[in-house]
Image (cartoon, rainbow, N blue to C red; front, top):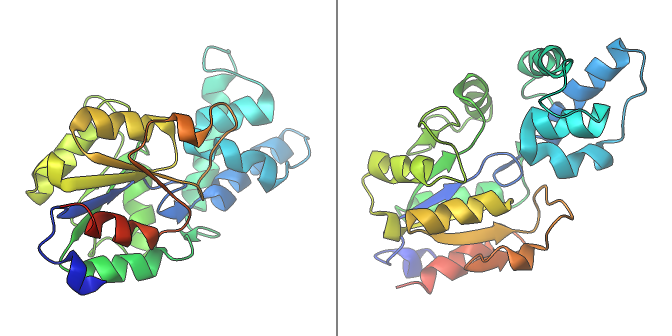
Amino acid sequence: MIERLVGQHIRCVLFDLDGTLADTAPDLGSALNRTRIEDGLDALPLAQLRPVTSQGVRGLLREGYGLSPDHPRYPELAERVLRHYTENICVGTALFAGMEPLLQQLEAASIKWGIVTNKHARFTTPLVAALGLAQRASCVVSGDTTARPKPAPDPLLHAAAEVGVAPAQCVYLGDDERDIVAARAAGMLSVAVRWGYISSDKPIEAWGADRIIDQPLEVLDYISRTT
């Protein structure tokens, strides 16, 4: 497989972070539950919180408290959830199964890879370091790196420029429709991943991705066929 990748059209693989590259739901869910327990509420099952994890604190507070950002309590609750998350940012978080072998294959084939997330840098930077990826990733673009986060194409275009690869030579993997929208707007190939934090609002087949995969190593065959 490695030999087939060398010299192919795709020169860079970019990953969304939460729900695509790493399973961050345990620590994000724990941050919400710590806040609920402080308020005298029961902890919610992780299975209930997992689908909203890609939506960050907004999704967590909607699921955990039934609140939207315009609610008077939202800022205070968001600050508490994020404080708990910062203090325990990589306790239960880990790369998804099959992701490490994929990264190793890409590196062996001299295919660059990077991270593009809507997570702000104050969370992204320590998390990527804790996962041991800071020195391996060709770029790490956070939600506040550019003026507009995904679904705008700005972060993906920034990533391509940082690694010195044309957008058309990049493929972006994500577990949310906004990832596919951003990739399409940036002129990149898009891959939707079934293992992520996918809500039931809209079927993954309706996102318009160039490819849908069930496990990380499937992306190798996809990009090896893209010339």
